[in-house]
Figure 1 (cartoon, one colour):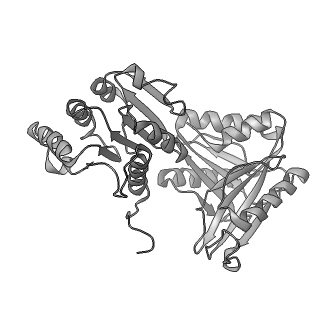
Figure 2 (cartoon, helix red, strand yellow):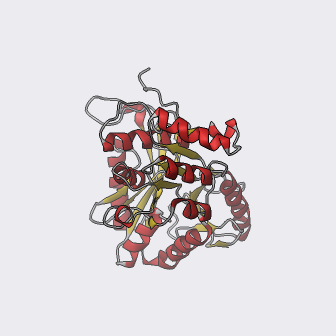
Figure 3 (tube, rainbow, N blue to C red):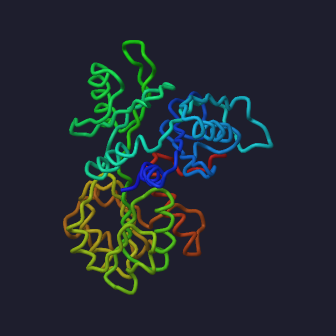
Length: 351
């Protein structure tokens, strides 16, 4: 499980004061969504992005100032004034970015944040959007446990309920304090989706790299140790040298699981497909020619699986971008995975 707060904890533990810049509200077209975040270190180095361009540069400067004086602030970025040819900003909206400060005062709280996330796989963090030097925050876990305070007991009770609602919906939001206090940002963090790559062949290598780059927890599975090892997949979260069917049968699968089947033959494809086709996974894709995938699907159908279940399988896998090289095919696969995850159409934006 990875969150940007692991980086914040690491930097604070090494003695640094760092700033986080979080998009807390947007209007119109903006380069990043509510909840997007970057970390700024005293060196000026950044982790993450809130969209790049001159808007991010302005926030970066505010973050550097906050690191020096310990003062939180909100930066309003009006992108309607930045649609020019000499910047990267081509959006036309407005976004508010809250710059927060973290140092040794938050060391124990950061430990609680990261432990809570590892144990619960999701969390909400409520932050009072004010320059208050006490830096009020409250951590809310799915079971209702909470840690930290926004300054008043009644407010803490109210924001805990708001945090649980945000967790149930999986959406970060800014809420208005009913007692006319400062706005409160409730940031929802959930465990990253899992990409299971069944088959460690030549396409799996760039696919695993892209999966990690796009924020997936990547699992590579192959029954041949020479194709499933850390040397071949150094960035993957798990590399399993084990039988396909048995491993997938025992592996936890849910609606945040994406499965790419790209084994070396029909029999292994079918072995994998039979283990996932009726599971509540978000995506199933299977590589191969139309003839090959049709043969596998026909065999699965003979086992009694319905047309509705067969229709869940994206086969041949990927979007049609004319891919030929392994890296291009991997890009085609990840494009389809992202399309499913984000609800896109796959059409060219210029159409």
